[in-house]
Amino acid sequence: METTEVKTEGKKLFIESYGCAMNFADSEVVASIMAQNGVETIQNEEDADIIFINTCSIRDNAEQKIRHRLKALRHNKKHNRDLTIGVLGCMAERLKKQLLEEEKLVDIVAGPDTYRELPILLSEVEDGRKAMNVILSLEETYAEIQPTRLNSNGVTAFVSIMRGCDNMCTFCVVPFTRGRERSRSPESIVGEVQELHAQGYKEVTLLGQNVDSYLWYGGGPKKNFDKLSAEEQEQSVNFAQLLEKVAQVSPELRVRFSTSHPKDITDDVLFTMMKYENICNYIHLPAQSGNSRILEKMNRTYTREWYDSKVARIRELIPDCGISCDIISGFCSETEEEHEDTLDLMRNSEFDFSYMYFYSERPGTLAARKFEDDVPYDVKKRRLAEVIEIQNAVAKRKNKAREGKRYKVLIEGESKKSDQDWMGRNDQNIVCIFPKEHYQKGEYVTVEIERSTTTSLIGRVVND
Image (cartoon, rainbow, N blue to C red; front, side, top):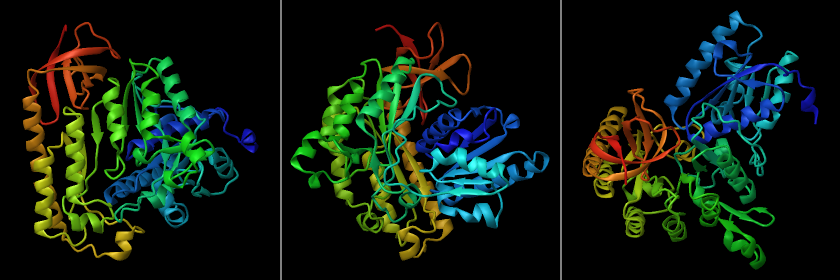
């Protein structure tokens, strides 16, 4: 392969990641690919020969933040002409030539499926050219690449199990920036998890835009189980089966997963969670809206009533399951009555926490092409504030009810507010803070909760 001749030996790379967990996991894949070509990834931007910004396009404010960052880096390049600046990920896929040629902010543009080509793109820059590759793939999963863990706490790690998305929600840019769904082989996933366990990691999070639609059969990834032959179905591995394989690596290894699409999470997944104590009782289940007409307009493929029944089923089978949510306020044509339905959803579902935003039209999405972004900005902001107010009240009340209870917590690192305290998360993904005493990072401890805030539980370690 020609990449062995690329003039990268001895260079230093700084990677800055924005957006979702998948972007951070991708940056670890990039670091591994670059290491194979003699490039060291460092934590100090000032000493870097190459700076990659791994970007997010899901909201306009995310893109604007990255633009400002790229402009600042371009200014710095005046003092270091040998510095190479590259933009990776979703924003690279969406804006392509605009970043490279029109605004001249970067030297390299690389989409999420082209990271193997980065050494070649760097060689083009070395030869005085701009370099771009944003071709989306139907097959690329980086399955055999062992990621270089960046900024790792040595305790928790992300493991990507699939790439892309086929759902085509009208508000979402992901299908256009990350391409079609394809799954990694279960062998490569379990192998990566086993390697992490051998290195001393105590928790893995299985990542995908929609983990519940994971599907692998003997010959490779395939989307629709019903279209498999009987032999292929016999050989296939769905998400519930993959989850079990990962849980079986070690009972001492915690397993989480994200994100679940409400239409795809099955009872089999819930039964697997019930079967294995080391699979955390926590599900991120984005609703996006509490109104059926808006959900249809978003192409979410379920109704409000269906979503309510899914939450009820989860709590029937796993009563102590933590559930979190995504909400978009002010989607196209949303009325006050429909907004009230979302507020009602927040009250009734009692999410442990939520990621809440007002609608930001993304160029190229179905909503941008088909619908008018007609809810005024100030109305969006007010509706979002009302959603946040209810979520905060629910979370505060639920956390208050956890006072006096005991939870198994994995120590992940120091508390952000005090170097005298540890932080970790309980099974339900709630942050717990407690004094360090003689305990060490990576240990499991039992924490008795003494007080709480909207976002955290505070307590002390007790002996069972």
